[in-house]
Length: 339
Ligand SMILES: [Zn+2]
Image (cartoon, rainbow, N blue to C red; front, side, top):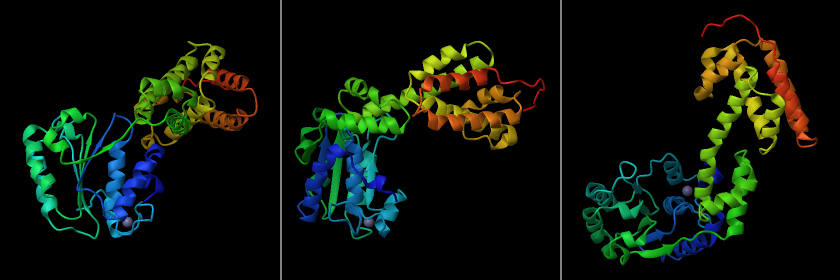
């Protein structure tokens, strides 16, 4: 299990500390209601804390050990003391049968030495019958059991549910912390970190929502870069103009994509069946490389690989121009390959 799986977001550190302290002091309530706006990591926090609760050898800061039998079961998504109740289909409700099954599971004795934990998410989509059936369990909790309800809109939960849970409010993080986190994630994804303030503004300060918005745009960008490559090879675009457009993107991201595609073209030309990495682009990559000599692809790949480290040291524009001009003028064979 990696560290990443156990970490919580930086803006949740103080909430984590206070709950971890209560866990150590054995003063946790039996039901917690985690509430706050979408896209700030409530569900993620509940899952991390549930993991800590089932771990049998927690660290002093409350983080799970990642090695005990319970942690291994958790990692395999198969811990018998950990229950997640969600709508069966997206946008659906949580039904009474699901809550009854949960209550039955919680009444069984614990599998291991940790807690029994349930996460109900999003709690506000429990229908009335489901919410009513949960009331008794919230009133008469079993020992060493924690039920975590996760909700965006408290007002949509029945008062009877709200009054039986201890509320834990999650807020949008302070903007500089959210900005630092988002910049780092965008850079990891090959996107421009400079987009962070605008993305956060659109997402009303919720960092996970901002990141999800950015990720939705990346596939479109990748597609448009590949389309430009196709247009260049068909002589429909001017490589110098395309280079000017690529220069506006975070460098060397477009050239990294170019490197990946040319590698894929070579793999495809050698063993067509092995071409599984970019199935969605298979047809496009096929038509891009089908009439180029494989040796030419190899030397072009070398050229890209040599150019990549130079982009940080030199003016990137002539490098991009040179690579795209080379691509646009790649000599084509007249042989027809069968696919
Ligand atoms: Zn553990």
